[in-house]
Image (cartoon, rainbow, N blue to C red; front, side):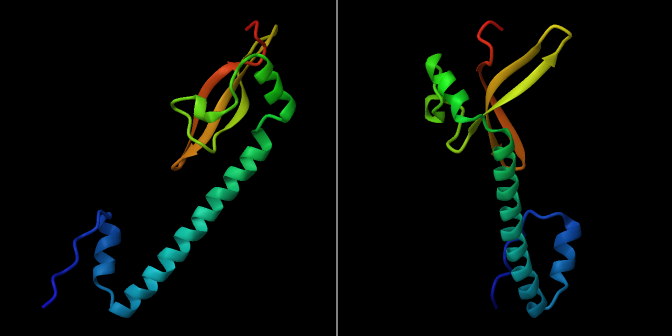
Length: 124
């Protein structure tokens, strides 16, 4: 008799109902889970592309950073993965000024990560 497969690290409310299903139903669930995972990855990628299109700095701003001797290559930063892009974030607004900074931004799992680069206005 074949040995039972190892129990996956799933919550009990998911695992126990699966254990009660027929082999045919489990194959249907497995196919659906695989299709659903692929769809969710596509949704995540579309969200990333949309957010990047909305927030990524333009060529003129990249050129300005380069003129200030600030690298726009993620490989020059130890904590920034390939695929990261540069965006501008406003961290504080006062009556006198907006505090705007360049950041690397990328997706890591289900969350967004940022890495500081420099102020938009070098005098800040």
